[in-house]
Every structure is written in C-alpha cells, then in structure tokens.
Amino acid sequence: MRTDLVSESGDANRPNEDFAGVGLPASGQGGCVILLDGVTPPRGATGCAHSVPWFTSRLGGALTELAVSGRDLTLPEVLSRGIARTAEAHGGTCDLSHPRTPQATVALVRWSADLVEYLVLSDAALLLRAPDGTVTAVLDDRLARLPRSALATDALVDANLRNREGGFFTAAADPSVAARAVAGTLPRDRVRALAALSDGATRWTELFREGDWADLLALVAKEGARSLVDRVRALESADREERAFLGRGKTHDDATVVYAEL
Image 1 (cartoon, rainbow, N blue to C red):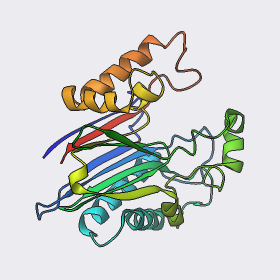
Image 2 (image 1 turned 135 degrees about the horizontal axis):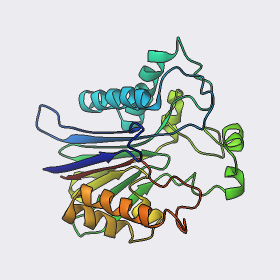
Image 3 (image 1 turned 30 degrees about the vertical axis):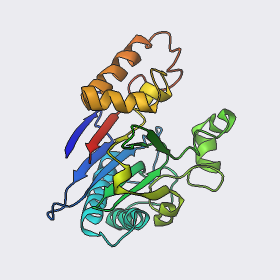
Image 4 (image 1 turned 90 degrees about the horizontal axis):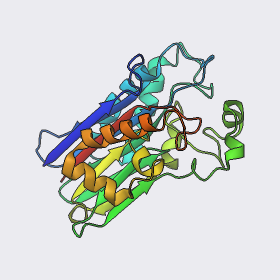
C-alpha cells in the first residue's frame, strides 16, 4: 500500500483550517482516509469561543478513531457520532445554533478486504480509480448547483441555504446532517487507488480547467500530491492581478491532497 499526503495553508500568516489523516488498523487489514476542509467564517460573531482549526482537529480526531475502531458503524454513523462528540466538547460554552458555528466539509473513505465505503459532504472531492483506469468522482454538488444570485451575500447564504433544505449541508453541530451526505459502497476489487481533496486542491480542475478528474488523479499518482499543490499555487499567482479565474475568491486557499493505492 502507498499513501501520500500534503496539506498547505493558503496564507502563511493564518493557520491551516484543513485536517487530513490516514488510519491503518493494527490488524493490518484495510484502512481509512479522513479529510476535512474548515469553513472560514466572515468577520463578525460566530457564537463560538473556538477557532475553525480547533473544530477540525477535534472532529478529525473523532472521525479517525471511530472509522478505525468502529468497524461495525457505517460512515454516515461515524460522521454523526463524530459531530455529536465534537458538539459535546464545546456545547456548554458556545452557541451551536449560530449559522457560523465552526464547520467543515468532509470526505471519508474506508476499505476492508471486501469493501470500499465512501462519504462526501459539501465541496470536498473523492476520486476513485478502477482497475481499468476509469476514474469516478464522488461529489456533493448541491452548493455548485445553487444560482449565483442566491450566494450574493453571506447573510443570504446563512439565512436561506447553509444547512437548510434546498441549500447545502456541512458538518457543524447537528449530527443529523450525516444522513445528507453522498455515501455508498463498492467491492474492494473495483478500486485500485483514490484521492481525497479539499476545494483548494480541486481548483486545478474545477477553477483553472487544467484537466479533468482523471487527469488530476493521474498527475497525483505520477508526480505526487506536492506537485498538484505546487501547480495550483503557480496558477493562482499567475492570476493574482487579472483574476480571470479567481474572480472575488481567495488568491490562495488551504489545499489538501490525500492519495492512496490499495
């Protein structure tokens, strides 16, 4: 088995809000990948005394432990319990009902001798390569399908769309959102390699259109996760002034890539 993991902050003056991990059970059979992309809140109150990195570290740690030791749990159950455990850690001091309480997008994958289980919530991405080279992108595209007018301001998003029916869902403080995730299973022999990516890394395909998902996974397999992040950074820097691709978005976003060959 081969794994490769890179996670880089988009701003050297700010902490990385992503979390990534690889779990390999002591039994030697199977493993898991956990990726969280912390949602940077706008300036102003969030109802919480804790930072986004605090939240993603807590939730990421809980998901790692549950995915490895809770083999009888489905991935939606793993996510639900992880969210509940994290909420308990700060529910006594923070307003967890606030729409900007710390939250994250999620990509989880776990494999055994027989099965590969997967889960994606919000705009993280999971790529699966079959033995014949076919690449399947597991995406939760609810946010991408919303009209731009509905996303015009943070206030509109928080009031009408964030963790609401007809909008999109993130892992925040409500365990029930785990049931909203895109999840499924495949036979182990139908997956040879996979990559989990935060949206700072998927910019290579989704924003800059340098190649499709199969091209992205081939790049990571051949040149490594570091190469993908470096290429994204170069594209971002080249568009810093004109912003033909970046528009009003961050010049650099936290970028995380986890690659595994099973």
